Image (tube, rainbow, N blue to C red; front, side, top):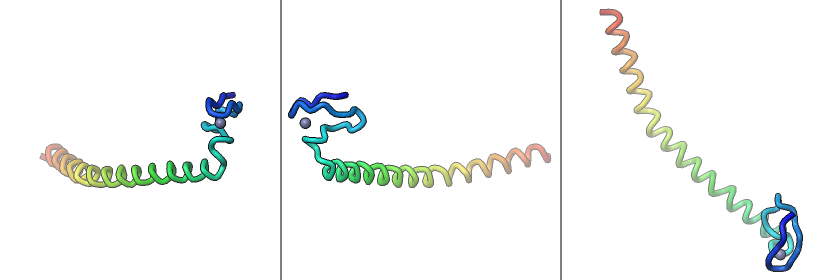
Length: 73
Ligand SMILES: [Zn+2]
């Protein structure tokens, strides 16, 4: 249990915020906001993964071809 400094209400730790000072509607909105931010970050991460991943795949491809040529010769 946590104790709210503003209104003195005891509330569950899982809530994170006092349910009296932060009504459910506001909590849902803030939850949506926090849910949207990670998706943008994951999109950015996906782009970085693509931008880094494709050259890395090409490089790996050439390394494998080079190794195969070494083995063949
Ligand atoms: Zn409170």
